[in-house]
Image 1 (cartoon, helix red, strand yellow):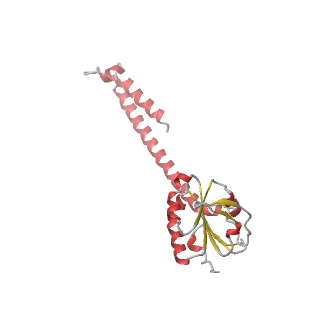
Image 2 (cartoon, helix red, strand yellow):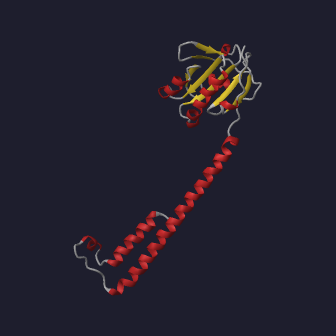
Image 3 (cartoon, rainbow, N blue to C red):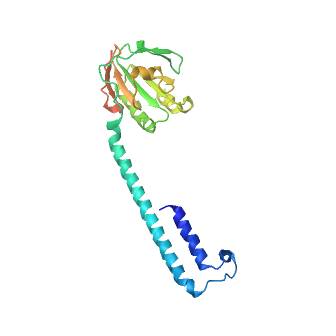
Length: 212
C-alpha cells in the first residue's frame, strides 16, 4: 500500500477530529462536537487497517526478494559463461608487468599457473589467501597473476602476490582476452606449449603443476 494513502488517511483523521486543523498546534485545541466522534473512530480504524495492510505487503515483498536472492545464488554458477576449456591454445598477447618486464605468450615456456583477479570482485579478495596458499604448497616455477580494474585499488594483490609476475590491466585487457576470461576470479594451469590444462574458479581445485 503506498505511503501516500496512509498519509492521506492521517490528514483526513486530523480534519475530522478538529474543526480547524490549525488547532492541532494550539495550546488548547477546540475539539469537535460529539457528533463527529463516530467518524473519528471510523477514521482511526481505517488508518489502523491501512497501516496493517501496508506492513503485511512490505513483509511479503521482503520475503519474496529474499527467496529470489537465494534462487539466483543457487543458479548463478550454472548460468555464468563457462571458463576456457582444457585443450585450448592461448592466443598471442603482450603486456607489461608491474616490475617493468614484458610478458607475452613466451612466458609459458613450461608448466605455469595463471590467476585473474578483479579489484571490483568481492570473491577475488576472498580467494586471494587460498591462491597464495596453493602457491606455497605446489611451488610452481612460473606464476602469472593478472589484476584488472582500478590500479589504485590493486595494492593488496601486488603486495601478497610476491611469488607471481603481476600484470595490471583494464577490464578486457590483452592478457584477459588471450585467456578468454569470462569470470572473476579464474585460475588456470597452462603447459609449456601455451595450452590450457585445467581451469577453475577455485585455486584449490587446480592440479599441482609439474616441474620442468
